[in-house]
Image (cartoon, rainbow, N blue to C red; front, side, top):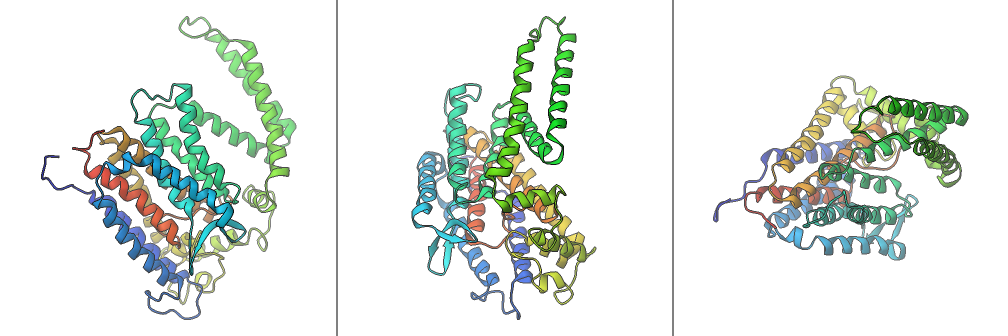
Length: 425
């Protein structure tokens, strides 16, 4: 960008952001736990507070776009340290809400630092990986970036807030783009498969499957031994792999039965079909699915949206806001919402790939990963495909901290992208 040229902000991503925020506000209005609706600006109601949060976000956007572009890279480390200190401070000054100490009380409002730690971590990861001579193929560098990602997650888990901690696995997308092998993702998929397998299938069958699969892998590797470019298969490596998998299987069973809380075990059991409890722990998911089904093709009016209007879906204006969209706007509305999220994520990836600066590209992939994981887990949870873990739907679930955190996350990248032609280290 030549000197004097105005930055060109990505209109498509800004337009999708505004669409999602407006749909979210209207959905919160429809799902508000009130007997009589008032104006959407009524600060005494959740939709009025959300309207206020949107106003705060408008100010934040102006500030983010006004700040000098190199500020975000230059102060990434400091922002990350402040976010870690804010998470540590919860153990001393935090307020307990719904069994979790995840908020600071500020008058009649609350502040959730974990929502802001996401963009701080994305900045820190981008800052570290964009340094000269840093490579994910180097064990030391990989351990450092893994530590940067793990630290906030480890501080969030004891709150307890496993859902927010889960979000940090989204940084795999950025790491993979920068050269991390897909083998790491494969290991994660195998670990998840073994964990769920121990809950569904008898552990004896799981061990037999492990032995059969690894034996087949060894036999196939022996058939390729004539290829001089490939290393010769070592049987002891396959034996060690089998032992590790079997040991992990036993540890998974122990973790599930002894370390997870009852509510988390029950939610996993319900999703896996091991327990049917539509009136107890599975009430939220069951009512959510009824609400979505009641919406039909084009949705119901507020008078006809019995699940939403009657308040039958607990916490519908927060984590279960997608069920309100499903009942009030029907299949058309839910598909439109899904397409908006998919296009936003796709657009962010396109923007990330056109960056000339590595810091901006890595940060962009971090943003895309976080949005994807939030969207995928929240929608999967609401329709009963995933356990309830308390992850909000970006820009749409009620909450000032979440809305502001996601807004900052997105608009920092929009700022970086607008200066991509002139921004260098």
